[in-house]
Every structure is written in C-alpha cells, then in structure tokens.
Image 1 (cartoon, rainbow, N blue to C red):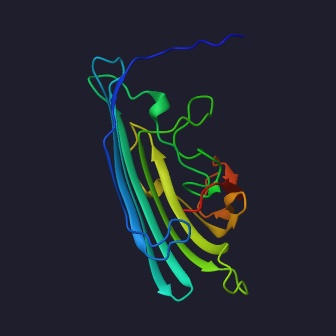
Image 2 (image 1 turned 90 degrees about the vertical axis):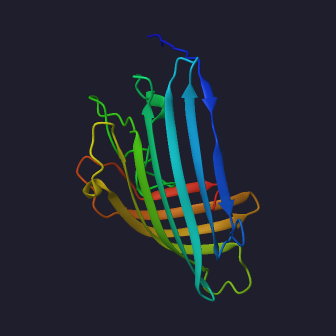
Length: 209
C-alpha cells in the first residue's frame, strides 16, 4: 500500500495583532490577553483562501485568593477565487485547549467514513474559577480550578446553530514543576450526543493558560 503526496505552492500573508495586560504570564489574577490573526493565501500561488481568528482571555480578581477567567474565540475561513478551502486548513475543537470532556479534535463535521474533518468556522468559550491549593500557604506552584467549556466547529454548508454547541464542566490542577508547567483536567460532557467521543482525563505539558 503506497501513499500519494501532493504539493502546493502558495504566497502567504499573515498579519496579526496582540495585546497583553496580564499581571503574570504563569499565574495571572487580573488583566487580559487578546489577539487577532489573519492568514491569506494569494496569487500567484495555487492555494487561495483566508483564515481569521479573534481570541480574548480576561482575568478578574474577585476575592483575595479567587480569580475568575473568561475566554472566548471566534474563527472563520473560506476559499477565494472560486477555490475551496484546503482541508488541512480546517478548524478543530475538542480536548484540552478547547472543549474539555470531549476527545481531541472530535467536534464538528465527519466524512462518510466517520473520520473527523474539521470545519471552516469555530466558536469557543470558557469560564474558569482559579484558586490556590488549600493549606499551601505561600507556595504558589500549584493552582486548582473549576471550569465550564463550550464550543463547536461548523462545516461550510452548515448553519451557525447555537443549539449544536457542546458543553462540559470539570476540575483542573496546574503545577509549575521543575520540568515546566503541567496541567491535569477531569472533565464531564454535559450535553453529549450518542455519536460524540468523550475524554474525561487530559494532561497538558508546557502550558498553563
């Protein structure tokens, strides 16, 4: 059984903008981080498409040891000049970085074989309460959280229906270890469908927020 490889030429333009006013990169308690990224493939390349993503993450100190984090993202993409959006430029959702409680990249459209193929639009949202480990005193290397996630990916022919959004909730433990930031999540899908693939436990290395 062989593989067929196909190559494309493209000219990419990638403007972007980011603002970060958080009081800490690892353990923020106030401030926000937001950004816009755009990717455009233009002639004379073979690929012609655009992708747009806007994300915002804001932290609120609502008590001396309690922080509320709210985040959201909207993203869209489409082909240009009568060309379709390349499949490998689709958006995905599900897993640690989007909707915890669902398997990685498992939300949204599937092909005729049931494989997840992503979509050209994505919407994500999270509300998370962050607090130190009880009894930890001045040790700030471990942080606990409770969260609610929401999100979905839509195919090009699908309507942007809010009723299709999946929700989950759960608990998280973040640790600034000698090997770098680590995070363990225990999440439960709240409105899963029979065809959804779920994942209760997820582990992240090298990222906190």
